[in-house]
Image (cartoon, rainbow, N blue to C red; front, top):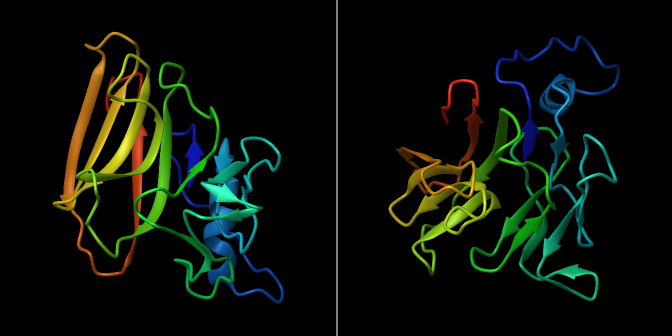
Length: 196
């Protein structure tokens, strides 16, 4: 997951890194070159800390729920999205597991992009849908945003930029296949144009 405050960007050319395959480093370094406010690789293999690779110690996340120093809402150390990269992924249980990354973005503050890689293995959510990325609450008087997938596989992006309920925006996207393939999702909030 990454949070970037640039709307237009290009992936840089990294040249050669002796002893390391370009495939392993290209994406990781491309994200860091964008100077994200936060970048959680979710590659931990144990514990409950989800380290912010862009700025460790700031907005580090906590795998929740947890007990006795171990995450109980899923499984760490799963095969990741990038072929050849030894960084692993987190498998969420689909009902209780999440990563609490604190108060990273204020929907009223600035334009930004939120990105996540996901791999769906089921669309059977107990409450009709599953939150993939979220900040705050999109259904109460608080400001917030969310990228979610419903049981029908349709992606929804919602944003509420103030406590005024008229300040809501939303988009529905394509239907995702439950085929075990990795996909990158991105939400771009352009405050200058008032668009998601």
